[in-house]
Length: 164
Image (cartoon, rainbow, N blue to C red):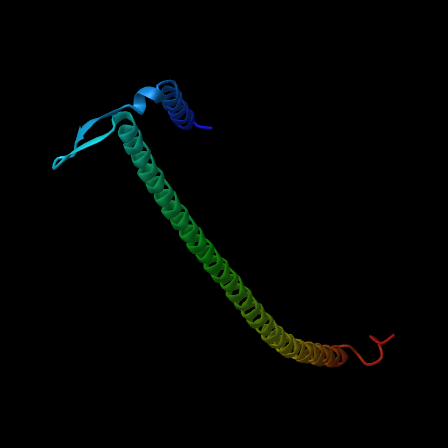
């Protein structure tokens, strides 16, 4: 328990002990002036009744404020839970959007890779064909040059001397 609660309980017990010890004096009648008229009644009992009335008013106010506070806390907790749920849904939505974006980008990258691979294969085929043509032409050129050199040698050398 809190210190204030213990202090309040101790104070109430002290007042109850005081009333119990002086109960006969509290019940002795006296003349009380109520503003308009005089009344014969026990002063201690009237004061004790007023103390009880004030105590009841304070207890009712305490219950009212505690109830209001609890209702406010429940409302705020409910709103916080709703906001948390909305934030979770938004985050899940962002993850879904990110996943879709990445999937689209991966598909686009795969399509570009396939296209570039096809283009590379076409270029390699054309380079290979050009290389084969160049090799064939070079071979033909070398054969023609060799044939020409052979003809020159045949013309310059006497017939039959240079042949083995």
